[in-house]
Length: 285
Image (cartoon, rainbow, N blue to C red; front, side):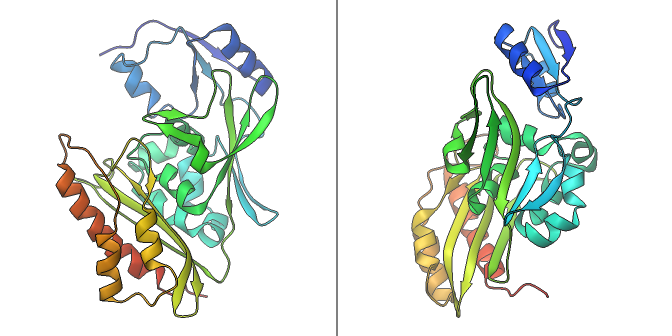
């Protein structure tokens, strides 16, 4: 299919972008376009105006600042995938990047675009949730920072207002006690996950503290499995403890063409066992 007719404007600044969003209530932002173009072609989206934000300076790049890793919203997936900073200081994101689509998609897609689209089966929203990340949003009056747990509101719904632009994301930089785990199950590599799990924790003697388990593909948004987190916190993780954590999984996935709810619940338990073992691994020096 072909998209419905639309106008095109290349913005040169955030202020111009925000003003255009105010003038054209149904406008859409174009960054990498890997999700947007598909929705346009299927006429799931029919904006009167596409605002290309790729010409805005200062919205791409990866840096460590004040104990946080800051990633500009226009940073391409491939840049994060190849970044030494991400590999060393944001290892959960490093593990997730190769699972996002295919090389052609990662070469063009942006982290900000993926997060703003908020597909419930996407990897990056779950990573942000697992890491306790935060997001910078520029609006018509103020720039604000929103925690990841408050950003994802529902199916393809976020805290972004009609004139808001996501400008950057930040996650805590890893240290010697940081432990992360990531796994997903999909029909083919590069497909959206049937079920996925992003996790972080802190080493605490022979056990773990601050366990955060963020599932994706099991609800309208990425969701934390809080009862399973509690079951894995402050104890030595053995087979008995893993059984208890799997039994405690408080997920309520729906049936769809890919899998039934029962299948997703089973696969969520399979991934929890795999990822819990990753969390207990001591990272290389």
